[in-house]
Length: 197
Image: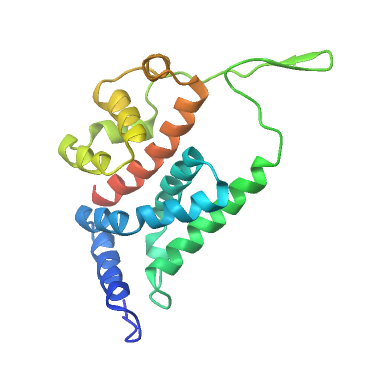
């Protein structure tokens, strides 16, 4: 990857880290995450004005960036590319939030009709099985870098093998919240682990 001589030294280091990450370096992924996690989080917090949403969107942004890392070109600084992914994802989130949201934890009524949602089995899906099968040392290194709430969710699900319902009860959270947050955290983990597999 060609390095633009006008880039700052940090931007040049980012490009080297991206190259190492593409070659499977777990340390490079972790370094990129460490460098930009807080900045991305605070940018998103300004946009959504909600800490939980900002945390979720931060994880999503890194998940998308790491999943599509081979599409990054050094025409722009890595930080510019990452911020664009994060802000576009956030704009999509804000657009969707304007539509009607329905709790998946309970039935709701509209006029004379009642709607309900079936929640899928709490057995591990192929993506979760992949995460569970990975080296636990490698996995715990990534998990340590996550926000405490996500760390606890991942530890309960993959290290202690709690069912969704048990996690919801243990953390005193609605089942839908547990599933949504685990889905986002799992996506990020899966993308990072797949690169190093």
